[in-house]
Length: 169
Image (cartoon, rainbow, N blue to C red; front, side, top):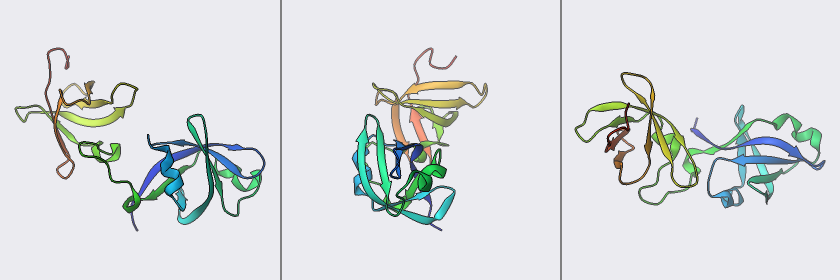
């Protein structure tokens, strides 16, 4: 079975006509307009065909074909929606999907293991890589900018970083 990738979470229903509110896991919300169908993560074998996409603030409003009442969609609340991994968008150079980064070994410029990438915090200025330190198990926060991130190798699941004084306590 093909691997599925989460692209959002249904956070609530909207109105009485079968629409759902989706919190997107992408910066490119228009992505949803390009999709014909999605999967509900706990029922990955069945596709839900997308009938209509619209936007409300930071949320996506989806209407699925054949689901025309609140009763038809109320059980979808809090479910994740996913797509086939083969359908993900190609990213620009030096951009990465978070799911590809998580679990990567983080090494310094001397090839010394610092730890493992466990999360990526996203804020308005830049992403922050959260690395679980190999010895202390405490989180090390590294800004995801070229000044600190020297190399990312998705195939080998390694990230080379430049540390500055005080970054690891």
